[in-house]
Image 1 (cartoon, helix red, strand yellow):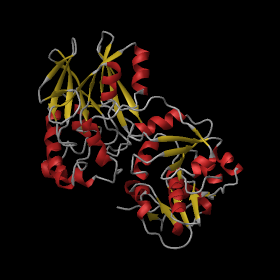
Image 2 (cartoon, rainbow, N blue to C red):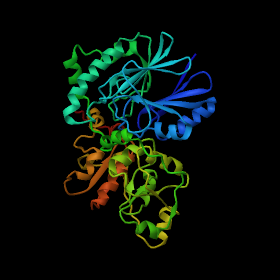
Image 3 (spheres, rainbow, N blue to C red):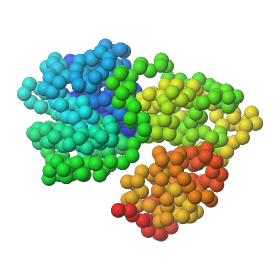
Image 4 (cartoon, rainbow, N blue to C red):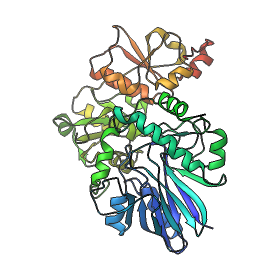
Length: 448
């Protein structure tokens, strides 16, 4: 039996797939530039990657296909109409690749992007499954507004046709999507990363839409905000991502080097409580967690910005490096050696921010920085909704501000952004909305 192993990036909400071809060789579909999971799975299974296929020009991460080609000699496959400017094998609709017993067949499925393809994995005449990228995903279809405003509706109509085509496969056909829960490419929440054609026909609201117009209305109505780097990474992937720098270590920097680094951004990756207890003034709080890369790209819009970091000893510098690199941030200058204690020891100022428990927060002062869809499902009465990504340009009334999110990480980032704008009376609510309601006995407000 063919083994298809999903390798999930929980932060980006995506899955790549390692396909065991049965003879020690493997195919990888939609690999990220961060190949650590691919390498670990291939080594564990005794496999050598000989091919890398991308379903589309990704907007949310840099493809690992060029790295696999340069490092492992893998053949790269992609849509023939994608205009990729690096060595690859372009596939048109219906083209097939002989994988040595198995066959990969390209199906044109435009919608999420104009050049999107799905791949059917075949064993003779039998369809083993479909790699659907950002076309048919669990419970939805991926967004169509990443190319241009003018193309959003035409691509949504193309997405309708693509889903209808995929729905023509047998009901028991496994569906292996790239985008999943947690992706800003419009995947709904949920634990399942894979599905079947039959299940989606029975439960996916978009496949149950009565006609194309209803499909388009539903799809476009589900679109939320997304990080600005989504608008440039597809072109980087079309040109071919540069090979990442060698090594995965952060150079030690003195307090003086950090202080004098013109144009650099100092990112504090420690947990909220550590940042709150003492941090370098004007540093950007972004806790190292699965979503680290998304918020780094959202809040540091220029990937050429030199980056420096503050971390705890138990936080893995390799994780910081690869999270940054997978979205194209390669100018990693180093880390503050000795952390905030070393900074303070040189006589430099240290800033703090109060942390509030649920019972201590005035809802009228709360700025809820969750996504609008999260806010709508339940929020503190009188709280103001400003998504974290929009906070740098938002206008706030004078007076104290309490930032909140779900677990404290985004709220701490928000506090750091407000500090940089000169706000001095900022606190972080460590409780989420449901915990606040439980502690205070008050009901949450819901927005339709």
